[in-house]
Length: 219
Image (cartoon, rainbow, N blue to C red; front, side, top):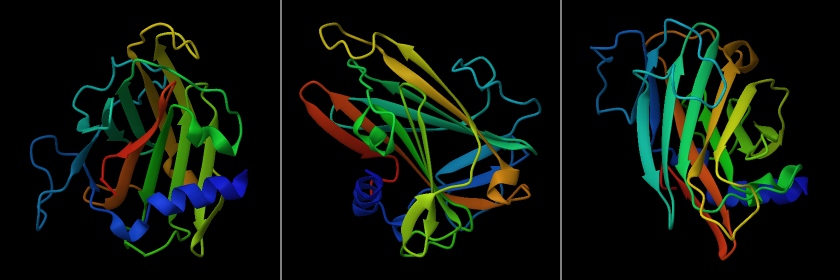
C-alpha cells in the first residue's frame, strides 16, 4: 500500500514543476515586491486560528480557487509565529471516504505539497512535504527522501467539516472543509515576512461514477 501511494503521487507531481508560490507577509496592504506577481499572498494573523472546520477566524486569508471535472475548490492560507494554517473548501455532491491507510488518496481527500526551500528540485527531497487528509480526518504525512517519499516525523492538527452524508451516493451533498495547522517547529523553519515556498493544493474526488484528481498548480 505504501509503495502504491508513493508511485501514484510521484507520477502526477514533480517538485520541479511548481508554478505556484506562497509569499508570507505581515503587511496586509503592501505585499513584498516580486519580479512577477506571486500566486498566493499569505497574511500573518494576529490571533491563532482555531482548527475546527469553521470559517469564522479566516478573515483576510489569501485565497486560490481551482476546478476539476465536477467540483470547485478554494484554498486559503494564513500564518503566525507558531503555525502555517491551510484551509480547503470543496463543493462536492458526493462525499466518500473509506480508507484508513496509505490509500486515502483514493477517497475524497485534500493533498498539500510544500517545497519549503523553494529550490524547485526535480524530485522529492528532504525539504519537500506531502500531506493528505481524507473526509474521516485520517492523515498521511510524507517527506521527500532522495527522490522518493517516506513517512514524515510530523505532527499537525487537522479538522474536517462535512456538508452532507458520507458514503451515501443516493443523495446530493454540498461539500466539505478541511483545515490544517502545521507547526513551523515540525518543519524546522523560523517564519519571517517575505519568505517564499513552493506549493500545490490538490483534491482527490471519489464519486460513484469514477475518480478525479485536480490541483491548483495544474501539474
